Image 1 (cartoon, rainbow, N blue to C red):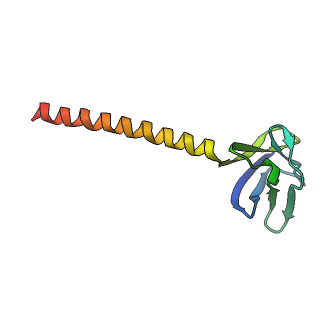
Image 2 (cartoon, one colour; image 1 turned 90 degrees about the vertical axis):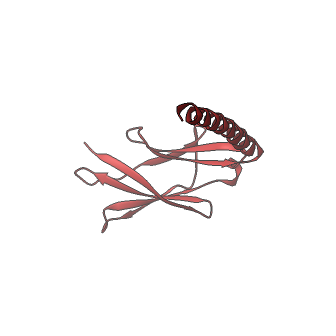
Amino acid sequence: MSKLTLTKTRLIEGVWEGVLTHEGSGNYQPDIQVTHLQEDIPGVEVREHPDEGLWVVRVPIPAEKISDGVQTFLIRDRKTGDTLESFALMSGDALSYDIRAEVTLLREELDMLKRAFRRHCLETM
């Protein structure tokens, strides 16, 4: 039985990077697939560092995949079908509206809690 672990290291200049490690016996060669809306992302690099016992995974994010809202990318092991990691890009007006709505809701809930707490303090004095 083998186990793969993929850990994000950074996102820089439109490239997601991570470190892939393997726990198991034998000479393992990973087969990584990255998808966005079930469509393969081209140009994924998996570079082995045998002296360190790991691989560096680089996923270039195509410009045409960047748009308003939340864009989720899945990184999977082709051999097992297991999802190793995912990352999401969030942007645009739709997102800012969602955040403003959430902040407004949180403020209303906080005001309600403050009033209840003040009432409780007055009643117990």
